[in-house]
Amino acid sequence: MYSKQSEYKNKNSTTFAYSLEAIMKDNQSETVLSMIDSVDVCRCFEQQIERFLNIVNVPVAGEYNN
Image (tube, rainbow, N blue to C red; front, side, top):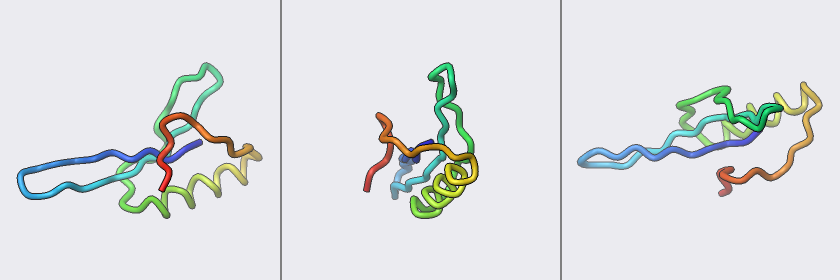
C-alpha cells in the first residue's frame, strides 16, 4: 500500500489531494481511498490497514514522500 499525490489546477489556484493505493498480486494498482485532503490522514489509513492485514511496508515507485 502507498500514498499518491494528485495535483488539481484552475485559473487561480492549485490544490492537492491524496489517494491510498494498493498493489495487487498481479502487480496492478487499485485505488482504495481517494480525494483525501491530508497526506497525514492518508498515511494513517495506510498504516492502520497494513497493521490489520499484517502487510509489510515497503517503498513503492510513485509513492508520495514528504
